[in-house]
Length: 212
Image 1 (cartoon, rainbow, N blue to C red):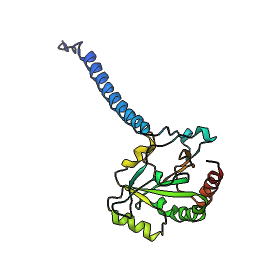
Image 2: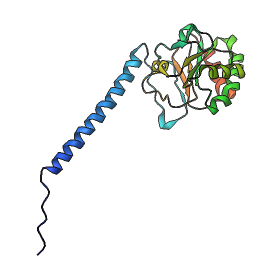
Image 3: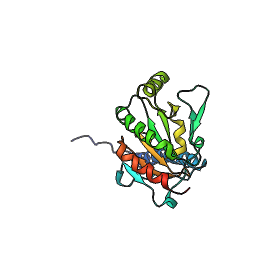
């Protein structure tokens, strides 16, 4: 006769369920904390709530009444120690914000196109502002600006802290990203990819012609 097999205690399965439930609650709490932080960032002067329907890489906010504002976006000037630069330095102007890194191949590819649009648009009331991210070696980021003859300023932000002004839901992992603000500094367009001049020029021209 085979020896009787001891049955598992009836309390084991409920105990495991309780542990799983507790773990789930912990994860939910962490996620809720992240979401709250994002909302706090948006609340710091901004109402922009980023949405990319169907994973689109080009998002346009029209009519103008549908455009949200970002928080205060500023930080250390990459090329000038002790100086701060930000969106508020360009009142009443369209502002093209480009998030880039010298380590990023698509950023290097689009640099001439951005400079081309900047040169063609700066006299029309269009400003450009770069945000250099994830470059812990500042000199390499500065070399990128010099080598590509970039004429507009950039915020030096290796930790990406300044991007909190864009809201907690903004996909900061997508580099390069270009955000176009209208004259009231509301978000009019977002490009989650490398750009050509013909992608960007019509957008800034249209916004430059809008009434403030």
